[in-house]
Image (tube, rainbow, N blue to C red):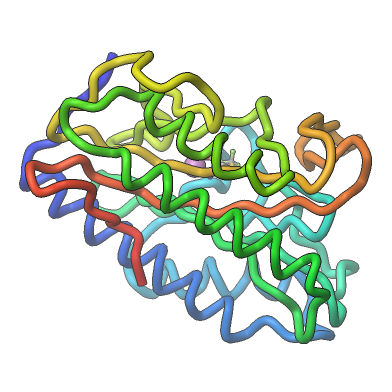
Length: 249
Ligand code: MF3
Ligand code: CO
């Protein structure tokens, strides 16, 4: 069941997503070689609580942390750890969500640690651009498949693959609502997009195969071929005036 949001609900979601965006911006500034991923988790949770919000992921289906930190070949849902020290050349995906005043916010960015290779830079750029290609299609009267196919087409045109095993989602009073928002599909297919839908659009893009494996911790998804992966996510409201990115910094 898809819940359409009223203007006042979208206003609440602007606030929860603004907190997510601020936290991600702070994490991006803080990232440097030598920092541990558990320090990032602590910082995210502290900033979030200071703003009166609750970290959305902690305890969600048993997820034990506030932040997902996925390095290099890790795709999503990486565990923060005091043993994981970031080093120059890594790419790190930071996925964060909050619950504030009854509504969720959810976004992700992938950031460079120090100087990174041209190869990694290109992956980050194409993945973020693919997210914007999808967002452009989040327009009243278009269909869900228009979002999915725009992302897939852009990614594959650059020689990369889109992960199939994880998808974007509706978001609102729950972190995950209908509909599912795959990053692959056919234009003109799927449900019609309506005013008041709020979607978390989140392409996960791999350099090599789209196939992923889950590590023994039961959460961390890695690329099967251990090549690099990147992830960008925004929470987007479909409005009469076009797509509104609620999680923009
Ligand atoms: N942005 C991710 C998602 O929407 C993060 C979920 S992590 C979890 O699925 F721990 F909450 F599952
Ligand atoms: Co999400």
